[in-house]
Image (cartoon, rainbow, N blue to C red; front, side):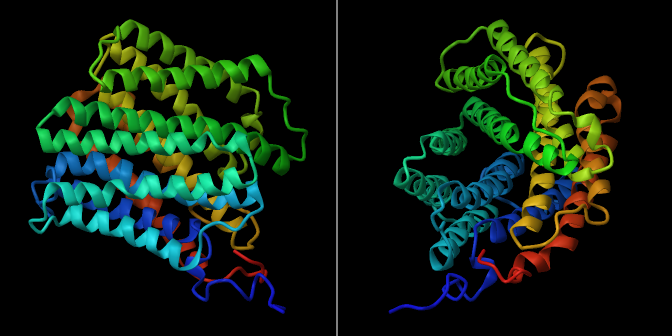
Length: 400
């Protein structure tokens, strides 16, 4: 008869107990290192000679190195709460982490390895994570949460497009694959943000959570999915009128913004972990609206992409990691010193890298420098506070 408690049966290494621990820590650290390499590149110093070249490596690694790690860390932690079943931990989790690390190392230092092997190592990560999640969700028939599995598989498709683009010399495959990845992660932000932002806000403020408006919810989700579908069509080489893409993006931006306005973000100004979530969700709308304008010829699409990637995705990931890492290590959920500054720097970087750069292209070099520096400071603040908690057992003695 086994009389040991679940806590006793946990992996001895705290870092291997839940997916958020290794992936949040490594993603934050990796993003800073990748930004240092990118900063050096803009100053004429080549610190790496990665697979695909530095331009490709920067795009790919911020999406599938940093971004995918945070997504997997969050989802493989959340699925345990959603299903009530033990998520991946111990040796299988460390194996998944090792695969992610192997992809980062071999893409940064190809060592003459064949292209197909580099791609295979990198491409295996997301499908394996999706398989872990699918097994847990299907076991309890929690169909509502199964939608995250195809999103991860589509992310893997975008990753494949970027690898094929390098192998075949198809710049458009690289570009459209990267765009698809940004939009897919934005969809995850909309899906998850719609669940947790109003919930966290109502709990902190002690106010009832605003009841969702079914038509608004359906319009928001349908429009962001339509944005992804159209981008997928473009990736497969079919012509999509720019006006159609722009209109759908504007609908998605407007619906998302109206949805956000109902969550009483103006009441959260005293709490950076909350206003960080609200403002990052707002940047999803800003990014989609700018993208629509870019499709109509107002400015370059990459400016809109960075509004979405830095202000929406990077900032929401920082705010979510800061909150989740406290809650899941048994600590009081509060804003630690400097986290508000870090979030402010992320939003400043987004503003600089997008609307300010669109208005003042003559100061591009300074804007690049400042936006990279702001990102690094923000994530170094996270690492300063959270490295040890993520590596240590829960302070309340509970499992996880």
